Every structure is written in structure tokens, then in C-alpha cells.
Length: 376
Image (cartoon, helix red, strand yellow):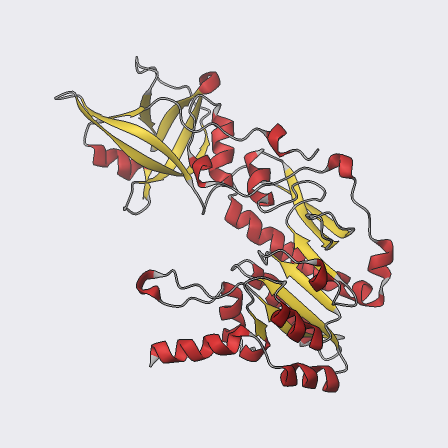
């Protein structure tokens, strides 16, 4: 029965009927807004739109939702909806008003989408390229919430790349969508200071929450056209790129300074994480083994590092693992995870060594240079 229900739900999510779309366009006098988003963080924006649209004097309605298709990659091959689709259904949103095209340029999708006569689209981490055919349909255009201070960090991983670079300030931008990557005119920006311990998932959530607030505030000007007239063109000379993160970037190179590694740990938290290959040595019999260690939480070590006699030795000081790094710096590691195990504190991991030593092995994957990410 559960399998049958999932199949029926998926069929309803594939597209919505022309008759449903026509009735929405005919009987509603409110402006028709379509939301596009996929991951969990996008639900912050969707909730803000639901709340604003439910106000008695709201000038708009959430006429449809577009999200990534369902995935069958879970254990047991169970069908898994995108977080946005699941969240919308949990909120009681009609399943026949949820689009799940594989590509936003599909003719069948565009046909039904156009029949809805959308006036404005809002995107927040949708994760799919919007072709010109799509962008021409909403009469007021498409507005994107982008978690950076555009034109800085255009691309798929703006928050991660900003943290990797160790920025002290970032922010969120509302901009009209054009065919060029995150290059459209800016409606508004809001900056925030970046705490040196915040990780990418927390910062991403904060920025989308702020972006949701800015979006709701700016909707009246977007609807009356003044936002389009007053939008600021981006300065191409200041544009930088935030490319998608590759799994092989997760390795740490301890020849780099501690601040560089700490920023990388914060940036890659969640996915893909940061890893190091370490050697565990038993001083009783001089036997050793290597293992992969996931580095979860860190900070730059500011204490006076004790001398162990061997530069590669990892020390344990006041509840933390102290990894020697380049430039005579050290990284304080607070939480780690062994393959197939749960995350543990540095103290628990050290106690599990039972007197064995921990050593750093060689050099790991080299980082992507900032110069490689600059737009030319």
C-alpha cells in the first residue's frame, strides 16, 4: 500500500493539468507568483511567501511550485521527494500545483507553465538552469535570492567559497535573473558580518532567512515595476566566481597555515566535509596503520605548542587534538569522525587510542587558488 501511495503521489507531482491552471488564472484577481527551489534551505523562502500571501490584503498568491524531480537513491530504493516538495505537501499545498521537470526547458512543462500565466517567478537554490524560453514567460520577470554580495561569488557555491576565502563580511542579494550566471540587475543587497566559527550550513540558513525578509519587503516594488526601473547593473570588473565543490577538494594539506585549514573546514561542513589521512603508531611494538579521519570542528590554536621531537606528531592538549601546520601554526581539532563511526569529541577519540600516537602523513590534495576562480 505504501508503495502504491508513493506512485500515485509521484504521478500527481509530474505536472498539473491545464484545467487547473486555467481555473486559477480565471478566478483569482491576485498576481500569480511561482516559486522555484529544491533543498531544505529553500523552504525558508517558501514559508515566507506562504505567510505573506495569506495576509488579508496580500496582492499575490503562490500559484505554483517548481522543484527538482523525486529521487530514488535512498536505502531500499524508497522514493524521496525534494525537501521543498515534501514541505509544501506537509503544509497542505495542492500536489497538482507542483512541477517536477527534469529540465526547465521541457516543452510539456513550458506549455503547462505558460498556460498558468505567471506574473513573477522567485528562485531560491532551485538547482536547474532556466532557459530563455522560461525567462520570457513571467511578465514581471524572475527574481533570484543569491547568498552573496553580488557581483562577488557568482555560481553554485557562494557561501562555501566565501568561507573558504575567510571573508569577514558577506550577505544576500535579490537580483533579476538573466541568461548569464547570476549577472542580472540587483534589486537590493544586505550585508552581514561573518563569525569566524560559523559553518556553511548555518550561514546558508541565515542568509536565506535574511533574503526571505528582503524579498517580502521588496515585493510591492517588484509588482509595480519600480524595482525593475531602479535595479542596479552589476560591475563586471568586480565579479568573481564560486564554482561547484568537487569531492576531491575535501582533503586537508597540513603544509598550509592553520587559518587556511580552519576556513576550509567551516566551508565544507555538511558536504563534502574535510578529511585527512593519519597514521596510528603503537610505541610498544612499533606497528602502525593508516586511516582516514574526517575533521568536523576546528579553531586556530593560539596556545604555546609543546615540542614532541617529531614535527608530524599530533598532540592532545586540554581536550583538543593539536595538528601542526605550515608557518609554525597549529590547528585545534575539537570533533572528528572515523569511517563508518559516529562523530566524537577529540577527548573521546584520544582516549580510544589507548596510548598510541597519531601522526600526519605527507601532503594532501592541493587547494583551488582564488585566482582560478576570478572571472576574466
